[in-house]
Image 1 (cartoon, helix red, strand yellow):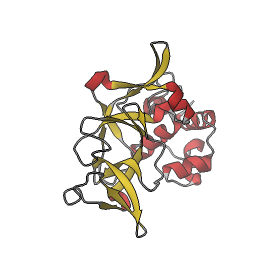
Image 2: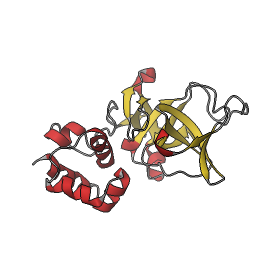
Image 3: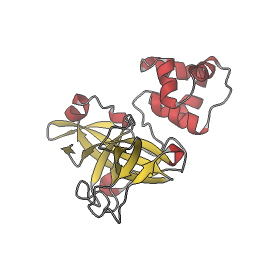
Image 4: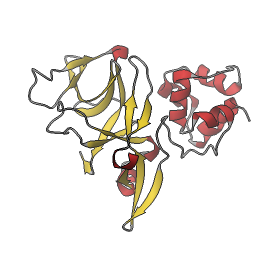
Length: 229
């Protein structure tokens, strides 16, 4: 089996239609067909990263067949595999705690493990399942700075759902803003999207317009240290 056939295998296993996968990756359905049929001889860069993230497979498995190739592998480079842990008779998912590594104008992310608290964070399995979250698409990151106080404080840990990038007014998202990872509240005003801070010192933390490749949504913040909001 070659990498083209493994795309079909992984896509079929997740019951994803070609048109839906194409829409998620920002390519045409014809491109997906070319990948799967073998017309395309090589896939790399952002296309490879984003495809593996969408299918839930490791790049080394997709390209070379290395590893077991199951769909429970970590979806972002540098992240640890999600496991189920039994703690005090309750079931948790342990998701990777990471630092985001972004590039300006580039869709897709890379991560490096955050050694704080052992590099993982336990979240209730019942909470994740009841919200229909894919635990393999959840990551934990530490808040930096004071721009989002009093909602988030410096040092807080938040959970980001990488599958949720559709903007909804007044929700908080992780954003690749000019190559920097920021947590901001997205606000719709005068027909435009804006990155807004919750800190009342708006002179220091003024809002910025979100437009084009300088502002790429990474995922929505769905949890803060065990608190839903």
